[in-house]
Length: 103
Length: 103
Image 1 (spheres, rainbow over the protein chains, first blue to last red):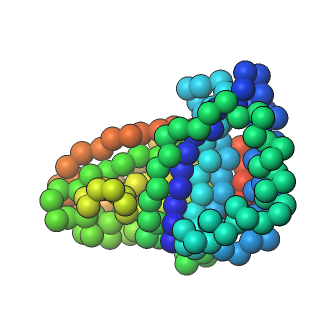
Image 2: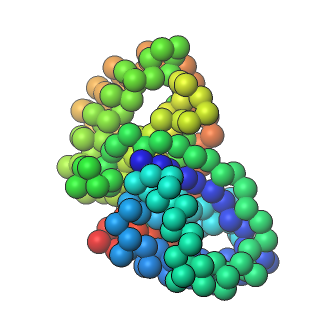
Image 3: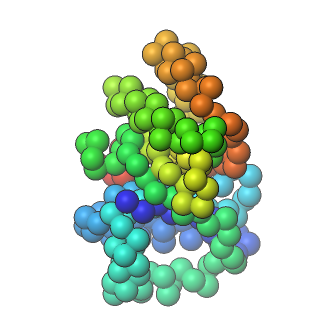
């Protein structure tokens, strides 16, 4: 499994709009069985910050998702709302509650 | 919802033992319906690093879990294997794939 967490900072006043786009992305991913987890969160210490936490079957599956047409369209629409990205952390999930192996 | 991510560093050579204890904790949490997510991951850039990613119904539910006897016992057993903790990030999950509202 491949895990990824990162912070996206919205342009001033745009966090809720950006959040809506990311939740729409999560709905698209519901149909993609290689995506195990895609959680969209408000940062508690930054009024424009959003954390995205992802777990995929593999890093290659994550890469492949970025080429899907519906996801590319969504990225294109959301991009103008983004001021910056930071704090990217990759990790290798071993298991736990909420992943397919434990369901 | 309440989210939490943090890094636990194992004593030298103890990552796999510590990981096993944390996966045991995740199994205990399977029965706790206030815990939505508890993912245990190996750090990819630190041979002793473990990331734990948690989502709970509320911060109070997370706090309450730390008083459960089985979890306290597990923490007591795991503590000698821990060299340090860092990179604690709290966040407020809004939704996404893999959380109860979307199942």
